[in-house]
Image (cartoon, rainbow, N blue to C red; front, side, top):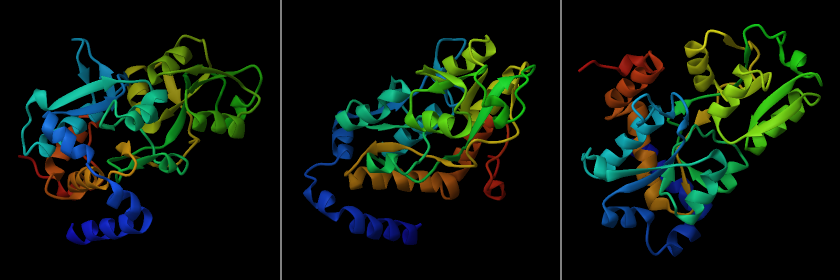
Length: 276
């Protein structure tokens, strides 16, 4: 990991040394003085973040955020070390930019236009985008969906709108602020199809046998990452290093247990997994 850390330092020096040198105080210093980290999450995209039957906020992203907080505060897993802010997808960038949250972990894909606005860590899980329809739907392919008689449920982000124009421009569209609302629109016949992140779609379909996923993916496997305000190298380096250790280092077993809890299988690098 040392080589990787030095490489990250070198890269950051190339692309943002001026910002790093000009930074008087890192957000990390504020977090340590405050005694807790404030994290932006979704509460409407199971299994990443949702409200369970007990009214509690749970999910894969929630558990990963708790793990990050635990190690930011020197292995202190106390609930007082983390505060969650439930936010819509449209609020992700404004909230990290304004400082309303310290970082976000919210089923968020690394995309070129996004890296010009916020900083991303390395990915903590693979994703992708697929289309969900009702099992009895006549839609079998993306080409079938490209028809004025169908309606697609889109999330409030420009990427979904762009994909709709590219793959099914003739279909009508309706916009929602949450993944749960997207899925419900299809299930209740308000819409005929919805774009969902692959792990989210699989989870929903598993819970709802009257739904299915089209075989043809909209976006092949991509990367979901933690995002934070651009220009804070110190805070970014801590988060990025912790996630690197989760994916293939000293924190892997703990990460793998969380992954298996929510997805029912071990991560891709299962050869490192050891039951304890």
